[in-house]
Amino acid sequence: GNSVTQMEGPVTLSEEAFLTINCTYTATGYPSLFWYVQYPGEGLQLLLKATKADDKGSNKGFEATYRKETTSFHLEKGSVQVSDSAVYFCALSPPSGGSYIPTFGRGTSLIVHP
Amino acid sequence: KAGVTQTPRYLIKTRGQQVTLSCSPISGHRSVSWYQQTPGQGLQFLFEYFSETQRNKGNFPGRFSGRQFSNSRSEMNVSTLELGDSALYLCASSLERSGGANYGYTFGSGTRLTVV
View 1: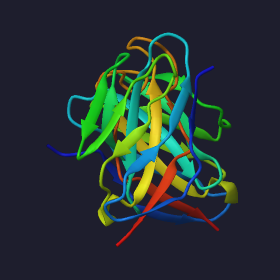
View 2 (view 1 turned 45 degrees about the vertical axis):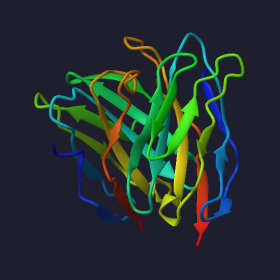
View 3 (view 1 turned 60 degrees about the vertical axis):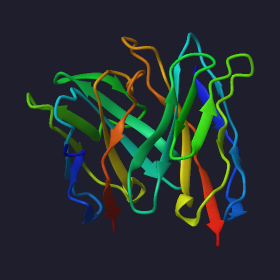
View 4 (view 1 turned 30 degrees about the vertical axis):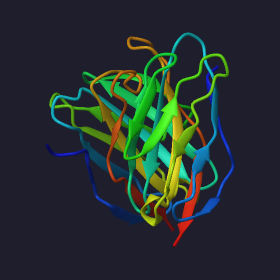
């Protein structure tokens, strides 16, 4: 079956540091890959996505590249802010029309200190 | 445009009671999925409805059920509540089935259920 593995958290950084959160996946076919972010007391928000190999998703300074050869979709940001403190989820969705359940990672907590 | 609306935001129930949670998806979205989120288990898929039909179901007991109306609004029901049902219940809507391969999900803010 499909699976998503994220690095364990929490990840603790100082403001303006470089961020990487690792995500690797196992899937049949060619899924789409997503990063979602959850701020305290809220639901998940779609941060960025990539629907095919070598696509780069980007939003709000965050980037991730769909690497089929390494089955990875690592999240990066060049300079984090305190407001980026949240839990980040990597996820995959099957191709449209399938009857598969989307798969989420366990989430990685990011804490950014001033 | 309006986001995904879940009501109520907070709920406290007693063991053995039943509860109904409501979700109004984004206008035009026909797929509604429900997730249970707990610190120990993370996000667990409950079920997905598309055009009023349950399309997928997660590994939860029959006490958990749901339905979708013709306007795409959805409800989920939990009967005979147990302490372990305490969780954040998230509703997610999408233009497509199975989590939206092209568009992804839009989540609501969730209903925090506490069973005492």
